[in-house]
Length: 196
Image: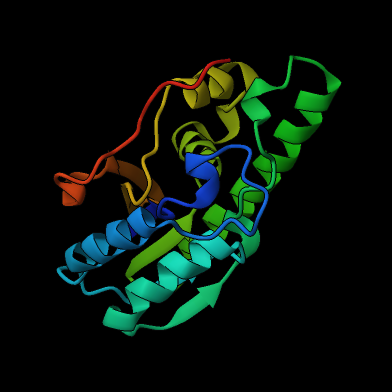
């Protein structure tokens, strides 16, 4: 049985200021969030860390792995590049984007299923985390009509942990926790509902 932990990167500059134009690096609070997260991850015998090439994910992973010191793979199947998919009005542009996301989510799930490691942490991004979660739940039954409200009505806090168990004998995924951020304790968490 595999345990797969999807973690949204720590707070970055654009999480605080949407108009920020510099390199989207972690804020001071993002560093603090990651240190707190790392203390929690020490309780899990992690076999592998996977990270995207985005700076905010890389910085989060560097802080984590300074303590865990486990093998690391970079993989952009888990990157956030289809920003605001759920905000695109219904039509050809959204359908095209949806189909591309389905292909990438399917590849990402296959990649994870084929890994030999049993406890895997993926440092990823909020929107892709929502999409891949929806894909894992609905698989080939996932439609734009299902995923758009799912993405609009689910929140992901920075360093929130979403955990799945995967049984390779039954080829079955099970969602265990969604956006668990209990490790943050008193550190402020912004899960405000964005305006559409």
